[in-house]
Image (cartoon, rainbow, N blue to C red; front, side, top):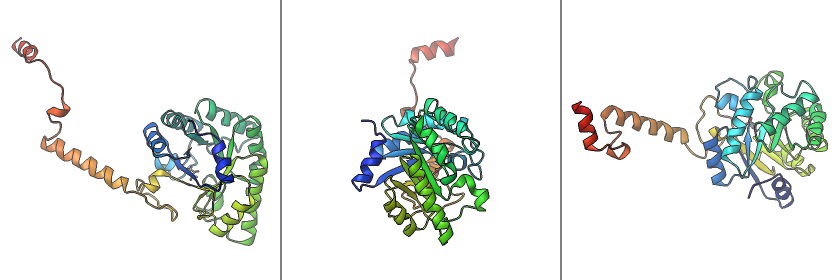
Length: 277
Ligand code: KIV
């Protein structure tokens, strides 16, 4: 059975935690679905963990569409949320709706996510009015890295905490079905989670959220350029991969691989005729 937007509402009502992970390709999406994830985020973090950029700002609509469609093909029964990349919605409400539509039509997304609160309430409202579910994203919003002066925790001062609360309320009132809260002090997130009727999905926002999201390369130990404080390693897949690569190299160099088991046979008579010609 396909997981739908209802799971977010039901989970909040029943006080059940929502699990979300990023994915950017077919085979990872399939593995996540087989593991029972509630929803997949095709995050623009793909710019960093897949494409090797320093931040998410260079990611294009074409990048997002390409990876979103691959994920949707791999996780047919999972709810897929895809990020609107930098400058695909900030420019106008019209661009926001048009590009959200592209993520659904071409990227096969079930919903879209965009960064920003009060300033982007109108955009969220217009996309929702076009029957495209929107997930908000507030707190530390990576597309604003230059405005923030780095990847910094948000909402620590009274003024800043009030700003995060106003953003959360604005996103809910605009019609978002859920909101990601990134790098916000745990007590503030707990307060906001109680205040909102939509689920709050935390990343670096403490335990008292309605769900959690992580970048899968961070939680599997596959991305060493930068490890955020909140990214617990649940496995050392990077080490497993490196060991697998090394064993392959050793077996190729020593002639152990490929053995007969991994090769194809030909009739001896055929070979005889060929070599005799
Ligand atoms: O792009 C992304 O992966 C995200 C998560 C960090 C929430 O937005």
